[in-house]
Image 1 (cartoon, chains in turn brown, cyan):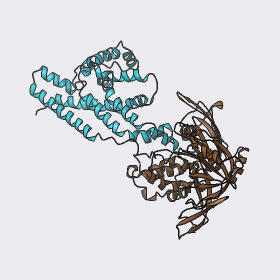
Image 2: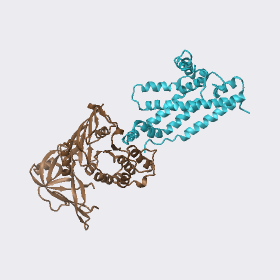
Image 3: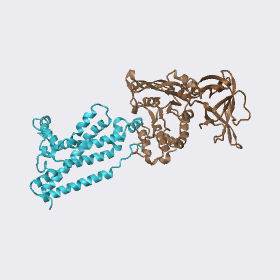
Image 4: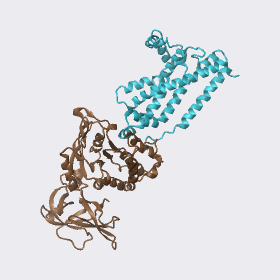
Length: 374
Length: 226
C-alpha cells in the first residue's frame, strides 16, 4: 500500500491527480483551519472525534459550507478560491455525496431517486454505469420500492449508488455507517470495500471509527479541534507515537497480510506478512487473498524471551524503536519493529522499568487478539 | 324555493371571491413563507408580525385602512387611477385585494411550517445531485410541502368564505358585485327574514364543518425524509 502510494504522492508535485484543500472557518466556539494535500485517487479517511471538524471539512469540499477563506483544487481543476473570488456552487461541482442518513427523497421511488442525479448530470443513458451500480451495490431488486419500504442498510446502498451514478470526479462520504447498527454495518462494509477496489476516483471518507478507517482507507488525515494533527499513508500514520492522547487511547496498527494456510483440523488460518505471521480463527477467504487486520496496542504484551507454555500462540521477534507517553500516566506506548512491520504495544510503566524496555532492545511481542477487517 | 336569486348570486360571488383569493394567496404567500422559513434576517420578526396582524385586528380596522389607501386620495388609489383602473373600493377587485390581506396568515403559516419541517438536508442532497436552486424548489420542496399547500389552500378558501367585516367596509353591499353570503345573511336578518337567513347560515355551518372535517382527517404529515 505504501509503495503504491509513493509514485502518486510524487506526482502531486507536478500538480496532477491531487486534492489540495485549504479552508478556514470561524464559528462562535468552533474554528476549522486545515491545509491538505491528498492523493488524487484511493480512499482518504478524515478521522477524528466528534467536534474535530471532519464533517465541516467535508462540507467545505462539497460547497455546502462556505469557508471564509478557502482554496480547493481537485486533480487540476479549481473549484474554489476566495482570493480570486471563485466559488463553484455545490450543484456545479462534479461530486457525489453520501450523507450519514441515506436521505433518499421520500416522494420518489428508488429508481426515480437514482435517476434524479443521473438526469441532471447528463448520465441517464449510461446503461453500463447503471448495470455496474446495480451489481456493485446489489439493489436491482429494490428499484420499484419507496424509500420507507427499505431497511437502513438498503437505503444507504441506494444513497451510494445515487451518488455514483452522477459520474462524480470526487466521492464524499460522511460517516455513511454511523446511523446503522452493527449488523447493517457489516452488511454494507463489503460493498464499500468493493468500491475501494473498483473506483478510479478519489474518495474522501469521514469517520470516527478506527476499524472503518483501518479497513477502507489508504491515506488518513487525523483531525483534532479543527486542526490537522497528522496526515499520511494509513499504515505509517496509525503507528506514529507523537499523536495527541485523544488518539492513543485506541492506538493500534494496521497490518496487510496474505492468507497463507488453512488448518482445517483446528479451524485456524495463518496470515503472513513481512516480519511474521499470526494464526486466527478459520477465514472463508481463499489462499493468496489479501486481508487487513488491526492490532490494538493494548492487546500486545512484551517478553524478554520466547515464552513457552502460554496460550498466546502469536509471538513475534521485535526490536524496540521508540517509547512514548500513553493516555494514562500508568502506561507507556512502545513502538516496535517486526522486521519492517510496525507494531505498537501499550504496557504499564512499571513493567517497562522492570523489564528494562528501551530503544534498541530485542524482545518478543505476544499478540493476544487481532481484529480482522476483511 | 328556499333560496332566492339574490341568495344564489351571493353564493356564487362568494365562491368566486374565495377561489380567486386562494389562488392569489398561494402565488403571493409561497415566496413570503419560503423567505420566512429560510431567512436569518433581522426582518423575519417584523415581517412575520405584519403578516399575522389580521389574526388579531378587528376586520373593521383592516377594512378602514384599505378603504383609505385604495380610495381616490390614497396611495393605492393613485396608482390604480394612473393605470386607468379607477378606484378599488366598492368593486369586486377591491374585495379580492382586501381578502388577500385578510386571509394571508392562514396561508403563510401552514406553508411556513411545511417549509421549515423539510429542513436543509433534502435541499443539500438535491444540490449534490446537480439540482440548481429553482430546480430544487420545484422538484423537492413543492412535493414535500404538499400537505402544507393543501392545508393552506383549504384554510385560505374557508376563511375568505367566512369574512364579513372587511367585505362590509370596502365592498359595500352591491348585489352581484360585492354582496357575499355573510353580508346576505346580515341583510336577511335586518329585514327579519329569518327563514331565509336560516337556509344560508345553516348552509355555512354545514360547509364549514365538512371543510374542517376534510382538513383534520387528511392531516397526516409524512416524515420529511426517508
